[in-house]
Figure 1 (cartoon, one colour):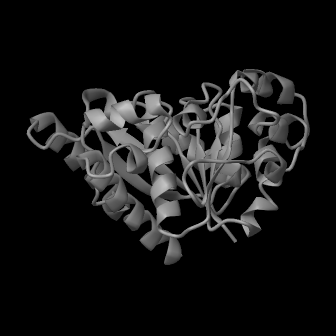
Figure 2 (figure 1 turned 60 degrees about the vertical axis):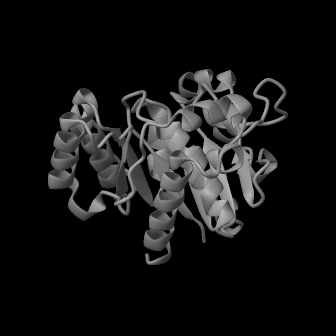
Length: 256
């Protein structure tokens, strides 16, 4: 059965989608069969893997609103072993359409049921909010990976995220836990980076991954070419960091 991990942080600009895309690609390179679920209406993970958002025959929207099994909407990517459940702006209406539906928070979990026996890892890129889409991800997930940028506002809203996780754990998914925290936009030369790192480690302890993600121009360029960093520039510092992070994630995942 696949391990389902949701990448979540309600704060935008934390490197969440970049992390989800590149961890998924490196996990596939490590001979794991991987599905990346793009649960963000912006569809950045979809375009970041070179899949056109405007000509999709089916998407995660259909899984959530029409009870379409995920495997019927999955498409291949340029990374061998990595499949994608894509997204586009049609997903914007999903939360409104599901408001009066029964068991609306379990739509993604139900849609992924068959896929769990097909893949080793299922990664879910959540939107930067704590609405119904993110609740669906939390209901389906075994764990949550929280990307946190090393900047002043990084810890703001953290209590809100923790409260949301605890609510889902209490009422919907008792096995849900934070799988790990990854520090992004990391610059060891800055005092602020060191302060944020100290705060995060004091709060999360060994949940914080050893691998950190630096500010790296090649990471910023790769999505515009529809490529993960391993295909765009596999020798960059960003690539090395995501390779190290993925190894840590797999080590933890395989040890569960």
